Structure formats: C-alpha cells, structure tokens
Image (cartoon, rainbow, N blue to C red; front, top):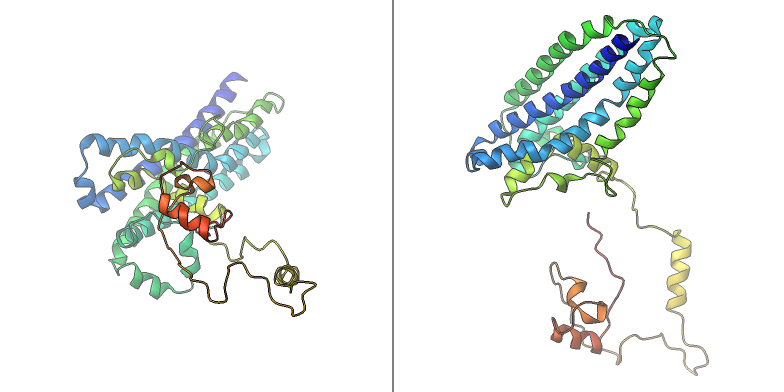
Length: 321
C-alpha cells in the first residue's frame, strides 16, 4: 500500500514541478527577448525576478494542477488508469500549447504597450491585422518559433516524465487511496499564496524600484487570467443598479418644482441665475488632503475655502480600473 501511495504522491509533486519549470523557462525567454532592459538590471535584481515571482508561479501551477490531481486520485480505480492517463496527458498538451501562445504574444505586446498581456486584448481578437499593427509589427515568425519551441519541448518533457510513471502506477485498494482525494483540496493553499487573510495578487511580485524588474517578476498566466476573472473584458456596465425607468423617476423627483409657490420654479443648488462655475481637474487628488472629507487639516486651505463656498460632493468615485 505504502509504495503505491508514495508513487502517486511523487507523481503529484512531479506534475506541480512541471509547471514551475515551464514558468521558469518562460521568464528566462522574457528576459532574453527584452535583453536591452534586462541588461540594465544588476545581477541581484535579475535573480530577484525569479525569487519574488516564485509565489505567483506556484499559485499558477497549483491552479493548473487541480484537474490532474483529481485524475491521479482517480487512478486508484485500476480499470480507469489508462483512460485517465490519456486525459491527463491531453490536458497537459493543450494547456501547454495555450500558455506558450500567450507567452509568445506577451513578448511583443510588452515591447509596444509596456505592460504584461492581460484580458483587455480579448476585445480586439476580431481585428488581428489591427492588433499586429498596434503591436509594432514585430517579427511574427520569431514569436511563432518561440511558441512552437515551448510547446514541443514541454509536451515532449511531459510525455517522457509523466506517461511512463502514469502507466506504471502500482495498484492500490480504493479505500487506501481515499487520502489522495484531499490532495486537490490542499492546492487551495498555494493557489491563494498561503493562509493569510488577503489572497496573493500581482503586487506580491513587486520588489524593486526598477519597473521592468517588477513586470518581469509577474507570471504571464496569472496576470492574464486574473484580469479576466476580475472582469477586465467586461461588456456590461457594473454600475447600473436601477432600471432605466426607476432612475428617470428618481431624477425627475429631484428636479420637481417647489410646492406652494405662486409661480413654480425649479430647485436651485447655487444662488443666482448665472453662478460662476469653476471646474477643477486635479490628477490623483486624494480625500486624505481635504479636511471636509475626513483628511488632514490645513493641507489644502484654498480648496477648503472653495468647498465651503460652493458644492462639495462627498461620494464621487473614479470609474477606472
């Protein structure tokens, strides 16, 4: 029983290591492709991109390993071992190819846009020519070669490392294999980056005053799918909380004429028929600097004076991401 369980546990760790190795190579390719920027970094900073990016790599590997962990747990049913092996290897080949394509696209998009690829590109997939033109029109054959090499190399590695071990798994009684069912659940811990209250996010990889080093430490798969889950490619307005009819009725009520006056007149927020309106656009202005909004006193005395003499909106928020 114990050798059979050990063989399966080793296979679980080997599969997790497969994806960690994939992300290690992808980061090496990213640094080599952007060699000019990488050459400006110190050796310690270059090493730091791998060390500080490891948690995101591990989290991504944990999510990618969830289905294979379930399949390996199901291998205790001996009759299903061959079928589960084919499913696992097929899943690995497909996901490897998809992430290799994503990593190759990220190389050229970063050169043009200065940020790692995210779900915002999905909105432009219907216009491939325009995408390529906006990306600077780099060498498509080089990117296809990177994708092909990553895919073929790691699929070959999966076949050499995983297939013989999957087919050689020793039989084990189903009852003895029940603890394997907890293995997929344990992936939650590395998947969220630990047991801390706030799950891991992109900022966990930021460690340097050099922007390129921080971006190189990001995991391309995590960055893309996290932005997808958060709704970066959302097509609906998340701020609509009322139906159009209810919103119109609410606005009409606020603009209703004053009751009891001989000549009905609209309610006015400012004195006079032609008030002096001063519109201030202040980039990155924070409520922490305004005493009337609960901030420090005396930081913006002239703005405080304007706020006291005009209209101050206390619940006004940016709609950006």
